[in-house]
Image (tube, rainbow, N blue to C red; front, side, top):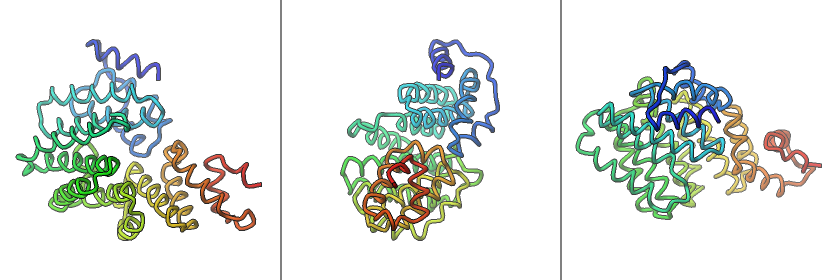
Length: 299
């Protein structure tokens, strides 16, 4: 983290240096939610890359830094992505960078992330005949849908989901993960829909809809693991505990670091453990408890 901080400061004052490391290696680590592999590579690549490569590296930096507890550094990386996009002068990449910047904003900010996502999507809308523009447009609407749900504005959330779904249907599943490796397409929209419905307090509908989703169509842990995490949360709320534990274990098998860093998973598993008699705890329940450090409560 000190090396990443130093690199971001140096870039901010205009002191870059030759990049060191493999972008492809970082993309693999980032796509796998392998923070331990991604973090050591970041400073070398952030130091001197430009253009779309830098924007994609900044995207990995943002979610890595956020998950590791460095939100201020994540916002610095996001600002670097926006500057890189402005130099490229491609509206689709500007939209992608703006999505990354919005992703870096604190979750407690009321309305600001949604407003920014809506404004940027509106700017892109006249040009969404271009497939790359449509992908950026769709991702911005997905984020606006989730934040609208968090802000308890269900009608807005559903409107944003509808816009994203229409864009995705017109594109189909992306080739080579599409613009900025966002993997925007029908499957991605359904993964986000699950999160939105969960935030809207509709776990039953979320579970029903999730039954037809195949997240493995997107070969990225950063898409698959959140799907199974959200499905597990929805199942816990419906007291379908064995199924919930299976979903959490599936998520952990896909992206162990991501799951073990999520306090919401620990809390959900703790709920299951508390309402299950000790002599009725299944092996999967005990395994899940051990993963999140609750095995000492099992007796």
